[in-house]
Length: 334
Image 1 (cartoon, rainbow, N blue to C red):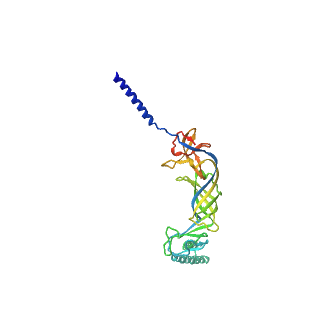
Image 2 (image 1 turned 135 degrees about the horizontal axis):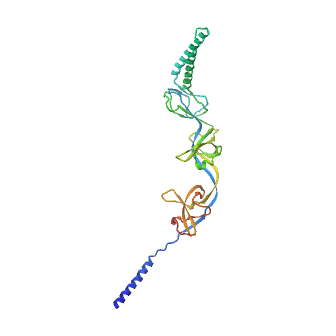
Image 3 (image 1 turned 90 degrees about the vertical axis):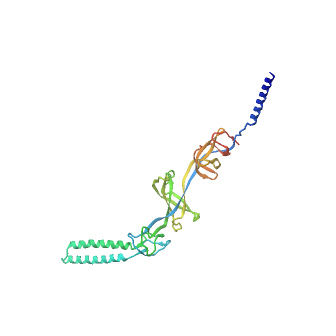
């Protein structure tokens, strides 16, 4: 009996020691402390910026209708030319032969007309020679037009692809661009923004070459088909260029004012990025728990963001302490 009593005592002591060790290992989890702010719906300016390269208002590629050897090029890239100015002279050996044939056909036709007048010829012969004369003259005029190449517009030579002595090929000999009174840029506008755009709408344009100036332009044309790859519409913007300061190829930034849109705005500190993705989230506090809301960002507004989705007006959002948070946990507001 004494041994039984001793065993029971030892077991009780062991149980007490075990309970003491368990209490020593208890981990106390602290509630995360956060600071919050309130999301508000305000009228946000919808100014959008698009980038593009400047293009000439009209572009003419100067080429002959048939291949020929270049004898002389009268202009260089950058030269200003006027409409009708002689730019390129091609080899004339073919045209000389055509001129001789034309003159011969003209003499034969004149003789046939004279013979008909004195009763020694026939109307049929006159008609045949008249048809030959017209064909010869048309061929000669076409060759003449394609031997001396003139500019159809006033502008600036923007490209030259051959030298004297070269045979013309698939490329134009010269390219002439019209830079006054306007130049243009082609921008791509989203489907959502396209519905807000109107022909004649004013825009502002800036260039890296003129960092302190703002140029005025307007929407000239909205193309009616959407690019299925980008889901955008092509829009032509024209910019006044009376002094020809703006050159083709310049990098332009086109700013369009679409008015205002009532959207939610939160402090920029409320927006967190999900690791490993481009997704953006905001923690929303309801009661004493937070939810992890995915949001779509709009414009950056100084120290705030416009949100296009994910948050409601008046929601309480966490702005500090997000690193210790997870969806659905309790927090303490500081």
